[in-house]
Image 1 (spheres, rainbow, N blue to C red):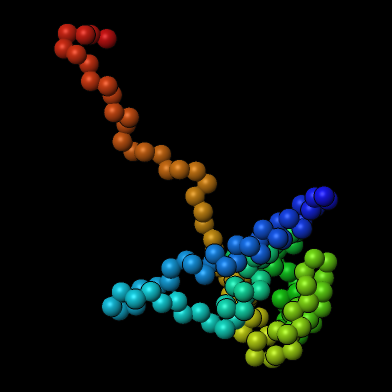
Image 2 (image 1 turned 90 degrees about the vertical axis):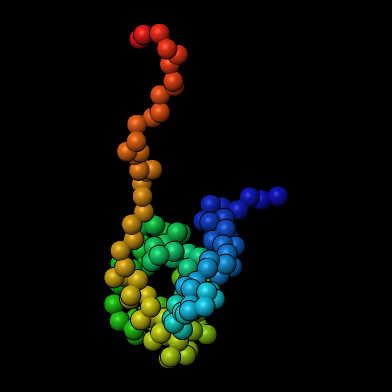
Length: 141
């Protein structure tokens, strides 16, 4: 049995995680019901792009982030790019052939560029000192 190369494996695992993204709870509406209001562009992105371009990055080619790509310089360039296959990225001609979907997806991707993502690099240090073991009376240290 031939093993998958690392890029194919990453793409495969990324595709498996997309359905899990829809299990993340949405905002709470009045009355406590969970609702998620997503734009058409965000829905397209989450179902077609997020697996390989999480938060505007590129898990296949980390040095070629989506948010810094010249492919989002204009909607026309973007439409032409997503309509054709590029390396391991498939063609999304069904999106590229629909002007409304192209506009909505392009708008959402451009908004990703304006996001700032912060993640804690390490656990915050505790402000409370470690509790000391109680010492029996009369034991001086």
